[in-house]
Image (cartoon, rainbow, N blue to C red):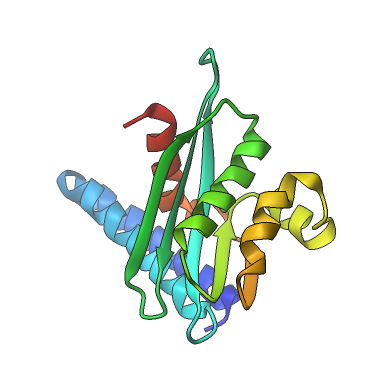
Length: 175
C-alpha cells in the first residue's frame, strides 16, 4: 500500500467513525480509540517491508507560565505491533523546538532499529529535514539517524496523528 492510499483509507475510516460514534454516543471513546489504532495500522502497512513505523508530535500549553511542553509518539514493528510509546514532558520550548524534541524522543525509543519511517504533522519539520539537514537545530536528530541504515521523515495530516498528539498532551500536562 502506498502512503497516498493509506491517507485516503484513513480519511474513510474517520468519516465512518464519526457517523458510528454519533449513533452510539455511549461507546464514542472506544470507537474513536479503535479508529486511531486502525489508522496507525494503515500507515504502518504503507512502510517498506521490514521497516519500523513511528509517529511523533509535540504539545505546548499556551497561556501556562512557564510554558509546559510535552512530546509523544508511538512505534510499530513491521507486523503492526506496538514496540514503544513515548509521553514525556520537555523543558520549556517554543512549539517548533518541541516538534524537534518529539522526533528525537521517538528516534531514541526506536532503540536498535535499522530502518524506520516516522510521520509527523509538522510540515515545517519535514521541510527542514529535507531541505536544510545541516541546520544546528537538527544536530541530535542527525546523530540518531547516523546509526540507522535507512530513515524517512514524512508528513501526515494532523487528523491522522491524533494518537501521538494525545500522548504529547499527556506529557505536557504531566499525566
